Amino acid sequence: MIPGSRQLTRQIRRHRRLPGLAALAAVMTLAWTVTACGGGSGEAQPAASGSGSASASGKGSVTLVIGAYSVAKDALQEIMPEFREEWRQKTGQDVKFQESYDASGTQARAIAGGFEADVAVLSMEGDIDKVERAGLIKNDWRSGPNGGMITRSIVVMGTREGNPLGIRDFDDLTKPGVKVLYPNPQTSGGAQWDINALYGAGLKEAEDKTGRKDPAAAKMFLAAVHRNVESMDKSGRASMAAFEYGVGDVIVTYENELLARIAQGVKYDVVTPSRTILIENPAAVVDVNADKHGVRAVADAFVAFLHGEQAQTIFAKAGFRPVAADVAAEWQSSFSQPKELFDIGYLGGWDEVRSTLYSSRGVWYQVQAGQ
Image (cartoon, rainbow, N blue to C red; front, side):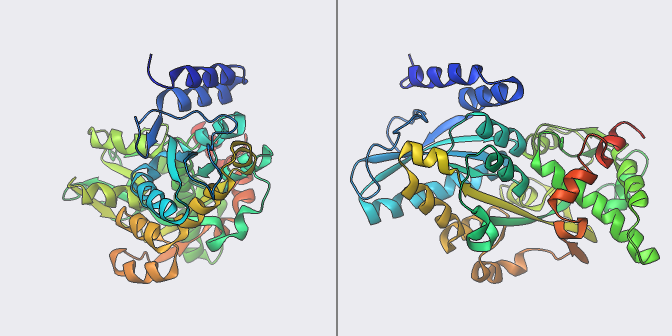
């Protein structure tokens, strides 16, 4: 038997009692995407009560459970050993990480449904809000540095090397024969950022032409792009993998996803649209779980570390735009600046976006239905 598998199996059985999608997400999260970081045998550590084997001020080891969206995986796996070493020097205590990576929406539902993550690192604040509404986050997570956000990015387009179709702006995605990829906004926070960017670009274009936002024109623009979509995968990372396998001509995605691939030697062109959205990604301690596991101090310290210079520099190297002002200034020349960069407030904020775009009769579902 794999070391620790009996405890993990008990967790999976417990999650099977959860209803519907939450059960499926939790089982998938625990059974397939959990890995360990931080020495020892590399086995997955159980997220059970008392998983902190010693107090934060004492010796021994402590296990911190991280539930994160898939796009952040590479950066987080570089950050965790740095935090581990800092924590050991400060407290004499070793930190082991149990990690789970999935589409942001799926991850949020898994945590809300019973996956006992101590820290949530998700694609958008609405997914953190799902965990909060489940009663698992008790403190005001937005009151921390940078409003609780740990990274920024923008929505861009990626093309094959040399940009053979001559893609210059979002308008080009509507041309006949152009095969477009973006993930599914029903499961992926990254996809919602993509749809927000396209819809917002439509509003901006109408405003530039007529002096006012025109939701009907923005919907028509989004529908024109969607007619060329060849594939909608579960997550931003899965969509990127499909593009790497040769699916599609253009991918609409996070800037950091493309920059990270290019840094690894993959030959893509990055096209920054003239009008696009600023992405902001949050992290928060899941209070109920962290307190239950006796890891409150280390969970708070890890989230604080994500805002610090060391982690922010690692995020920047991974293609994210830093939120820490000093690191952002140092890396400013590494990122292209669109002509018109808008944020979620331009669309009315997340509550308005969820109602206008993603409700059961919202713009996105009308576009999918061809209405």
